[in-house]
Length: 419
Image (cartoon, rainbow, N blue to C red; front, top):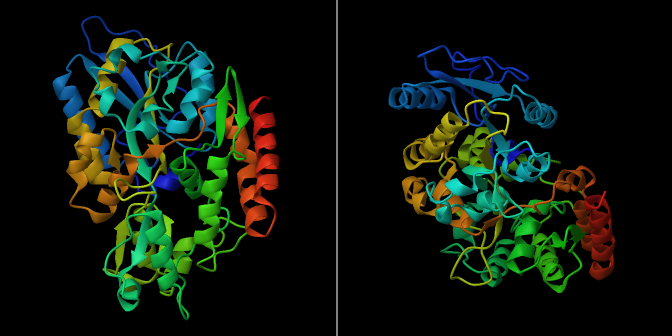
């Protein structure tokens, strides 16, 4: 799936003396005695041109036998281009892919297994929401690069007016605080009825899942007691605001709703606060952040983790050099640079310290430690295309029996995953 809407828009110049191409691998023969040319595909708006310039310069200074050809790729149509590249004899050497896309590409057989490198890359410390979707059938194909996830953005003045002195740390406290905030013209929370990524976190927090693997087959799991408990919490929280029951956070854009100043909370990535402030500059300095609360105060709640992994195609003609690029991008030096530049969560839990001075990113990093990704089926993208989860949520919020609605949604998911 496209992860960029989750990470938030970032201005990116055309390239760093780099051309956008539809394929363009690294199959050119290496000049005798010259450096290897390693082609790297980076998605548009993932990182700034300044970061790429620093990385290229620094990497080539440390690896004088490698020349980097970094090519910026558009998200539109990327699935087809990556699939074609993996099947070609002229593939790029390193490709950035959405963390939930790894299974789809690995199913083609064109992605190199990097399981033997995980210890060297500190794999035991990786964020689960990036590492788990990069691992298919016990093999690590995707190496975590960066993450972003939702937090609660809140209006400090409205909290103070309601006598709320500290953000809630448990789901029970969250409901109580939100009910206290939901008074007069103030909405305690704006939570659209079809914000299914937020629901996913509530389901995982209860020990449930959207779908589970049964042998070699996948089946929908929204009708389990755990998943139903997650939906019940969503229903209670959503009722404490005026969010529409039949649309998601994009219709209308929730940042525009929040910017009116009469909403106490939204669930979004921290970058959403900047959008709100651009719409209503009077809110600058009045917005705060806290991780999505969990069932206990011991740790934040589970959240969906979006972001990117790095893969090396089997057809790479420079696999060792390609790995050196992955190792550098996934290493502490460039993880720290990128996290501070982009306000992303680094790929390792121990690196959360590097962004502690940024309140929004720090809250995001705390939640990322409990991050998860969507079911690791190559067919999951097809589920999102029709998204019976959204229809299920609306059905429950408008009065349909939850068990019956969940059974229908699970059946739909099972059918799609088996196709």
